[in-house]
Image (cartoon, rainbow, N blue to C red):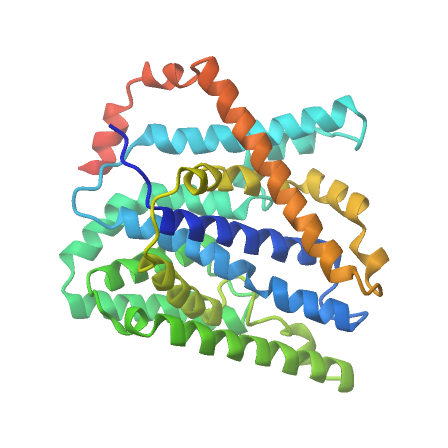
Length: 353
């Protein structure tokens, strides 16, 4: 019997993906620094939380992964890999058929060997993390509480504080996810911790801080010629941001302790969040998105915010419908039987033991 998912975590998953879509809509449509307008600044403040959504995704994975009876299943990872390749190839095929873009061998290469492309950095780090979970759990449950705390602090200093201010460093995405996993592992073993006790208050204060810093950087960039401020104008919201890491912990605990009834609708929609990511963040789809919605064209319009948020909602909804249709078709043709017939026990036992 399949255990029903907790809708409070699934709702957080949906909200996190919305935040990521909002963030990407700004990231791919505008330059951060130039061409300032109050609409652009307001929209960036709304889209500031994309990395917060990324952190929450990893926190959810960690919360349910950190347990002593965790069992590694290669088939689960293989499904994620195949889904990523599927969307990559289907989108390339559609663009080829309708001649929307000149398709090259590089497009096909990036779709199949996405591990060696920066297009889906999240998927690469996520899949490697899945392979590492059994070993990370061994570390979490074998170390003394104080030693685990020291390890988490050191890794957070490296992947959080260091990368926040030195973006060009060599610390990778996988190490970043390892840090987030161990961080939640430590907090899970210490219930009633500072973040859980102060979830709502902490989230509000960190949000105010992030918005204030972002506004301050905007002001400096428009009034002074300061190279450092220009190059680091979005350090509060970029990948690895220490501030987003902390803010995401508070948000995670708000939803972790949220008392709502399990909703089939929420759980079904949340089940397609990965599909939403793979569709909307595909490099070819990004170009179509920019052509169709043309954010820059309406930047000076009083309706800009509504148009921008509306377009994000449309992209999210259409992507969800497409992924639900994919799942329905696969279920009808019983495609899951193919993987069920393959014995992955040796691979599973290798990682579990």
